[in-house]
Each structure stands twice: as structure tokens, then as C-alpha cells.
Length: 218
Image (cartoon, rainbow, N blue to C red; front, side, top):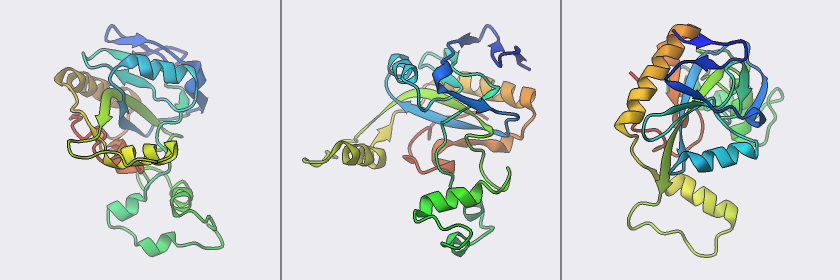
């Protein structure tokens, strides 16, 4: 089990504190699961630079050599998930018709509407979200595969969308997976949530399907 201090920081020789208050949000009263990400960058410095500017971020960062940094308090939420997919669709417990526009859920965007409906539920009927999950980032870049080139004349938004769809994330290193397995196991033992509530980012939200595809935590 992990020793967690009053500030929500892990006290362990295997975890280095590198807290960024600007990525922390409101209180997280309990954690129901873990979401595993890859950074899309080749090293930690670009991640730290992004965190200093605020915005999105996760609770832990695992470097290619297996070093683990804690970047946010376990007592506080961070924005690391995005709009949720419908878990009941993935598990064949509902139909797409249940997410059609209605008086109760009038959102024009189908993505926003699905997220709103999902957030009326609790885990395990929905996936863990920003409100109740721990985010673990694994350093790893994403690049276009051989033979795929970005079309000319795209705006920055269009370029990001193209990369998000077509890029392929590099493989997680052995050292990263060893650290990930240890960290996930310790968090489950300490915070007492189900091992079935550990998910890759693309499984719970609309992200590149190759993100963290080679992460192994069991």
C-alpha cells in the first residue's frame, strides 16, 4: 500500500514529487478508477512545459526509463479524460437510440449529449471520468506512419485532427510497463477500487486508438 500524506502526495522512493498546482481542479472525494494515457511527446520536458501553462494534465507521469513523477495531488481532480463514450454501448447493455436528442438532453452535439447522459450515472455503469479517476501519463510520441503525409493547406485545427486520427503512438518501454504495473497495483490496493476500472484513454473517450495500446498493467 502507498503512504499518502495530507496533501495527497505519495511518499515512496519509487515516486518523485513534481507537483503542478495549475493543472489541479476541485476536490476529488473518491477515486473509482484509473485512465492510462500517452503524452504524444518524446520526453518529459515538453509535458512539464505544457503543465506550467495550466490546462489539462494527469496525476502521474512515467518516463521512458521507468521513473515515476507525481504531478498532481490525489485529493484533487485534473482534466485528463474528455467527453465519455457510452459504456453501455461497449458492453451491449443499451442501444444508440437511447442517446438521441430529447427534451431532457437537447445538446446539438452528439458527443456532448452522450457525455451528459453518461455523467448522470455512476461507475461501473459509466466509465471513470475527470470527477473520479486518476490519470497516468506515459511518455511516448506519436507520428505519421510511413506512406502517410499530411495534406497541404490545412489549418492548425485540421492538422491536429489529422494527426489525431492518423498518427501512431510508439511502443511503451519495458521499464515503463514495469513501473505502470507497480503503480496501478499500489493505487488499487490503497484506494480500494476494482481492478476492472483501469482503462486506456481511447476506450473511454474519443482519442487515437493507438494511444497506450502497448501499455500493460496486469
